[in-house]
Length: 362
Image (cartoon, rainbow, N blue to C red; front, top):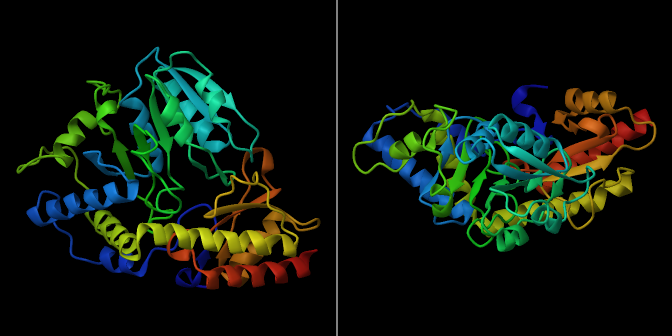
């Protein structure tokens, strides 16, 4: 089985859109070339549409989603600030780590893995936090946390949201939901290889931008002069040209299909998968009513070995499925259905393979 024949159904990178692969082979321009600057500006406009925002400071961080997370915290959290963080999986836990390293007083609002966090618990966790942070689509559990009630009732706090696995796959309404700071990753529902982290910052959040953050590379004070420059751009770092070509092509593909249509395609694929899996003995694990269509978590049928099952899927069928993390390692599988991979024919391939693997191992 060659790499080009493999179908990624795990929580990591989705197969890129064909237009993206073509874009990656284009000749490389200089990062201050006027033609590249025009492409960057257009990419940022596309991102505003996908984020559903008018935020001026909307652009791709030149690193993966974890760098987007770090940029979101170090630019807005000062030592001693109170930060309320929702934790119901790996990435909520990681938020706590990043906030602590920025010197924050972290108030955790924990929920069992596989269950959504009640927004009211986040709002009542502290009387006057500087920032409330939560993961919209928790990649480790397949859970969607509600965001709109937080934006409506956040008071003076900034609202920071991890949208790594949600942007482009399910509705993310940045302005309507009152999100102040949000970041994502290129490799999930946008159908682009990993390497970029789209981020968007509200004008309200910009009023709280720390003058000298702990990170030089992620300092938005300097980056914004390159991203938002009029005419000559302030040099900050060399942009990853080919990756930005790829993101531009991926966003063109999403918007060419239509954002609502892209959401609907992910939802229809998720609904189909959720309907079929229990019939094969793979029970849905995430809380009903909060299950992600783009990342489905299931418990394994009795007798099906986690590692052996995933090895057979990969080596024999070319299908990569993600294993469980933390307390559900070895007990849960995470099945991605994102970007170009989100097609009914791919789900049928997966279901056929699962049926055969189960018959062999159970």
